[in-house]
Length: 137
Ligand code: UDP
Ligand code: MG
Image (tube, rainbow, N blue to C red):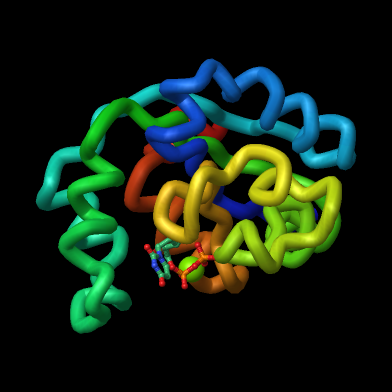
């Protein structure tokens, strides 16, 4: 069993899509181990997306991620990191496969409804950034 980290981003929370997205996650046989709604501060969003700090879209991304609440979640299942990335679809919804979350729901390459960890190592870092051991027990 492998854990991964997911965010339902502000555009999706605003449009009442938490339930729809979680239904897609659960029907793909991924377990939602922990889930909470939070409001990211600018500082937290900057730390979370630090790997992109030199990209031209960074400041707009931080502004978007702090524009409303997000639902942060820990998912568990066999090969969950890769499987959740597949369920999410490509970063750019125009390139996402049919039936993926981003194809169905994303508004743009920035407001693309969901985040998912890109490796097991990053999943651990991201889970520990948002959740305590107590919340995962
Ligand atoms: N993003 C953006 N413009 C781009 C590429 C990415 O606004 O040209 C945003 C988008 O919200 C994306 C996030 O930055 O989900 C992180 O980018 P990454 O390349 O890590 O994509 P992901 O791993 O989320 O598919
Ligand atoms: Mg990424």
